[in-house]
Image 1 (spheres, rainbow, N blue to C red):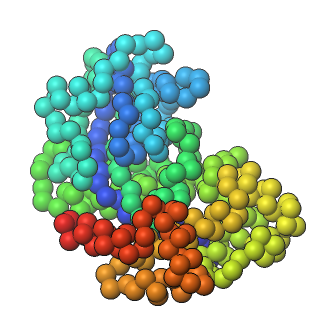
Image 2 (spheres, one colour):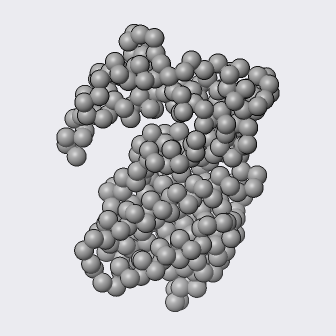
Image 3 (cartoon, rainbow, N blue to C red):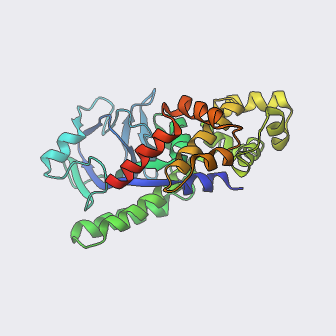
Length: 318
């Protein structure tokens, strides 16, 4: 079973904005904390990224992703004064992204000159079962270096799309932008997982040839009463070696991961119209309604019945 494909298929882009940044001379952009996942792909020139333990110099082909949108800075030099991104957007007379998908891409200028540095930037929000498992374990700032496999052609396509859509307002922009952001997000995740030496939570586990077998076994049989020994056998490791390796790479115990997977799957099933709570309980292998309700409350703070009601209310209001 391809666990990554299953996770990505369960996720959806809730909203997005695409932008081209043209920067020249002395400039600095303060990407303040916010909601969503911002990214920056350097197409031309060089700049500095501040926000990691040490400043990083970025060049063409470098990609920065902030999965939890912690504050970070892009600048022409490490000591350059900065302008807040919200102020830049407001002073340019452009719409501020507050969720959903903007009706057009943004074109912004920083500093002076004709744009010695060109950057494809964007923000997207992700929802669905996979988002909870995947995004939560990514680092505050992810730097994928130039020539990472599979990224270049997709970001060149994104830049062409931004330029075409900026020139002429045409119907259907939001639909095309959403599909493009889906593709960019998938490529970012795949690149992060296949990058040599990457060990970041669930992606590290999926990239591990042994742990990935156990991670695939759980969604294939979510109702099975898995033990650590059984998952270790799937991975082809001893119980002790498997448990230690799982904790070190995935950053939680195998049983904690199993419980989290079941509860996130329960949320997805309960949100579907017409789903019976009893059917969800049986599909996930709980022996009684009480044990299912107790586990679900510990995970979400709500009973399965209350969660389903709130999900139906949100869906009808959307």
